[in-house]
Amino acid sequence: MSFSKNIVLVSALTLSPATFAATGDSQWGGEAELGLVTTSGNTETTTANFKSKLENNREQWHHLFTFETLHSSSEENNTAERYLLTAQSDYKINDISYAFGRFSYEDDRFSGFEYRATETLGYGRHIIREKTLKFDVEGGPGVRQSKPEIGSSDSEAILYLSGKLKWDVSETSVFTQNLFSEIGEDVTATKSVTGLKTQINGDLAMKATYTVKQLSEVPVGIDKTDTETAITLVYSF
Image 1 (tube, one colour):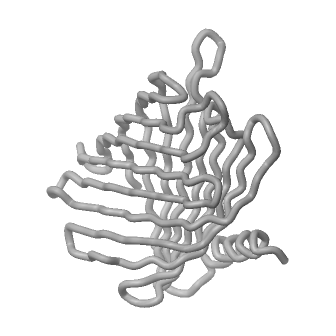
Image 2 (image 1 turned 30 degrees about the horizontal axis):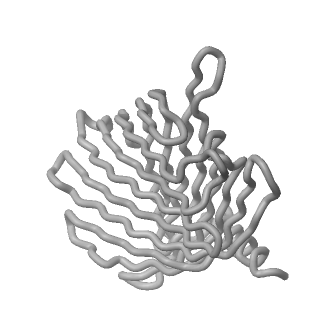
């Protein structure tokens, strides 16, 4: 069996519903976001977007699922259309470290690709774990499949690296900074998401984010860098 198939198989097992059968208390939570997005780069438009996040915590496991969609049209023509799905399962090794399996799938109709998917296995560590400040780093090998709009599909091995910062600025405000990088032999993909969420009332909050995405190599006629500025209403449950 090839390295690529091995990664896919192990990731599927790690993220399968069977892991939810583990013993111990189970805690569920999540968020739903709806708001406006201003984009620049391969698309320049202002449109509505929707994001959702679902988390499950157990004694040894932490599961995270996210879904994002963006859609805009003008004069019966699509000007922006994107779907992004990620799933990650963390297995606690000790108080400061964990093993993880991660899967992501992106379909961006204006990126020059029909789709891009990655499967990763790796190691994570809690560098800072204070009451108001948390910082985690992750890294591990993986595989990325890409299908350009023109040309054949491609698969390559990657090194996945990430850093996640969460700072409770006050009792009602939270600052986050997430950086992700997929380093491949042919293409390196980097994504930075800076966010500030402020509680409005109860389970409702307002969130502002600034996202920068960059590819080292892109199809002809496509910009290497995309940016997004978003203001959303967030409902936590």
